[in-house]
Length: 393
Image 1 (cartoon, rainbow, N blue to C red):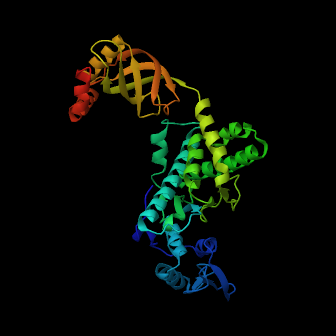
Image 2: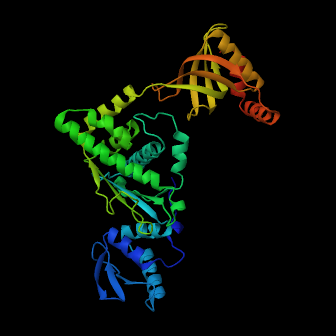
Image 3: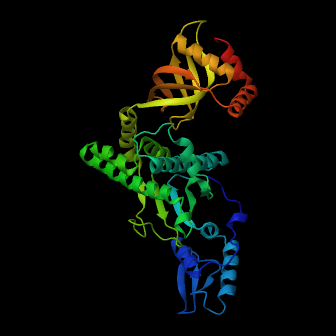
């Protein structure tokens, strides 16, 4: 996710008056009269400061001038919502807003810590949504993480004043082909509602089955942990989602989604659910292809442990594998020759799907000259890996 600069808050062309009006209303600006069918007057949320004149449509004779003056007034407005409105115009899309109820941090170091906690919790929540959009699972661990993180790259993060409020902008164009960010926002909203319902059910009845069925709605350990991060040390959090006024709501969702809130009273239920997701997620049988990047054993000869950088077979970056003496020797020879290996086993949920259990059948693979040169270059650029491959240490 990117943090927009001041320049990115500017919009190069006059916006659609209907879109600007929807954004003003969303951010608490009040419509105060005007001339019906011609223009309307809008004042900031606190009722002070410069008001805006907004044409009803682009068909009004002075619409371009009024829109330009309105944008200039927003750029100069001291109201915090003005920047968010300009960002929404610059990057049309969905808005996700977090509000975290915390006391005034006071000293600058505490303010910075509160801001970073809010940003970290929001990113973790969006990452959980991106994981759920790709695959439903109670615990994702390291699986599909690269793909999920790539899905967050286009998102823009607004300022987090005092660690209390944060807005993330998810670009969504008017064309269906431009709506690559929508799976994240829809998955997040669906999963948050399901988490809230499951938490209420367990607190009211003591039953845990609601969290089990909530996995199909995208609830996972990563989401419960993100909520815990945001709630801990606060009096509660609130999430609001607003659809792009240009694209409108996706099919099957309300035009104005209800906000979702969590409080410290929910923490014990969320912790328990997250731990249960980790315990219950089964191991996954896989056949991996990868390059050996670390080797270690306690003494010459015998079994050892290798770390494999995964190329194919599972959506994880690296795995740790305990090998018997023969397989360890084969892996070492492949490492020295710059060859990838293939190995079968069970990807265990313990440790976040970063360990391959019951590994067997280690086999070097032949690669073409170009791929071999690339692998050897990697070894040359990482001498520590090469030295570890040569020795038993």
